[in-house]
Image (cartoon, rainbow, N blue to C red; front, side, top):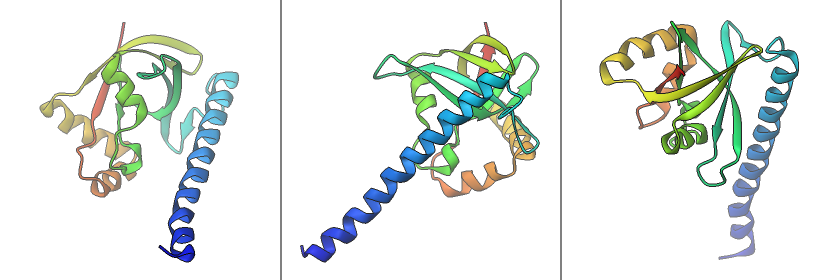
Length: 156
């Protein structure tokens, strides 16, 4: 491998690392502003409501908080594990697969929840409602080969 080829290979890796760090920093800022303002800042993305989901890291055991768009369904919160249409599941969903207990914050209220995957039949109706709320979810599904899980968070 030439020096030029080696540089070309490392540039995408460097760019990916920078983007990952930037995304992490923006997510942390979003969480902080949401928590400080009780959701007045960061509680909506366009016409879609945002909640904070706190899971327990499956590898570290540390608490991890992620802002997510959600659909209110009675006393349940419905969130798609879309990860922006990535081929990989989002970390928060992998954490919930290891430990289904979590905490949701909506505005200033914190609620203990348990996660479950929507059944095939239930997913169909919930997915249609999620896409109606946030049309980009349909594009995310087209981008990935995996079926985007629809996760139901049940208040405990």
